[in-house]
Image (cartoon, rainbow, N blue to C red; front, side, top):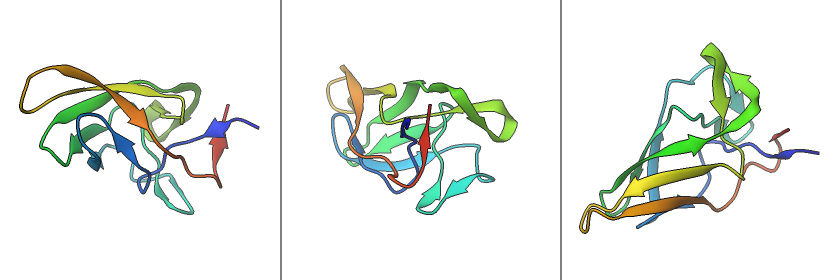
Length: 99
């Protein structure tokens, strides 16, 4: 079985806890919500912006966008310091997996 694909109601963090993911994929959803793609823009509770930099290249959704698996990576720029911080995916949707 593959790694869980990230869906909207998961936890992610960088310099702060994840606040929202805004992306182009509103067509494909799991039982828990819209699936996250590499094209998503991330925002964090401390106001920092971020984005995904690696997705699951074997699984694509609406428009050919690569999904973000629980092993995906991302970057954020801390709103206070300007430092680049890695994005960490804390949990994925256990009902949906990809490989």
